[in-house]
Image (cartoon, protein in one colour):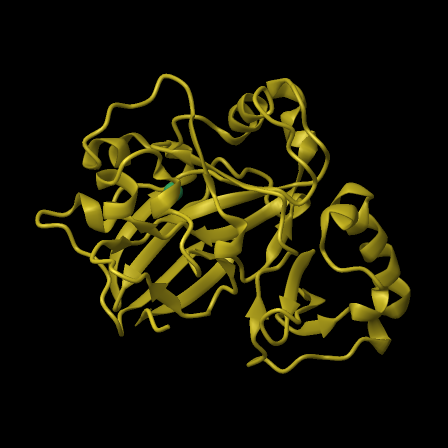
Length: 285
Ligand code: ZN
């Protein structure tokens, strides 16, 4: 099943996208895609509900605005330098254990919303990433148990301001958390739709020029390893997002580096998870 949310920003309603691409309003199911939904078998309950109620669901127009396909989660945990070639282009060593950082959940926007180049920014950069949505609370889970804690997968662009991230004091979080820096979607593909998340093609282009093109089989740490590792340090709650890192081809890695300017169009996609598109615009008060 593919979960979507649609409508005006801040007022999104839950929906589903069918196999043939049609989209349905499922707000009469009575629950949005939040911690409770994922944690209390919401995916199975919605599936069962659809079997008897699908005919009465309103069809959505194809140009409806999509929001992020889940309510704001308790956290976005990101893994850094999780593809060997990207670690290299960033001038950093391949990590011995997963590098973790947070991204503020206030950065979440819809998949096709504009990305705002932050106030004072000259180094806004892109990162296509496979994100995992947690389906069951995870604390100290083993690698072999880890995949039982996954609800599904979603496309994420982990926008990053490289000066804020790397040239200012302290941690990466400053360059990762600006408003609009986390376009998520178009949809969450439930786990059953993606038999092997550790072997998916992913790509990103800027103004039509393909700059990232790789496969999640190049992960330094695969998804089970990452979930198990993170759960040693914090409890993952249903609906939480783990963003699994980006491959080679970010703006920072070019010589000279390439960063976004207003009007640039970023498009990205992952096999089985659809595509998204953001237009860059300048910060305005
Ligand atoms: Zn990233």
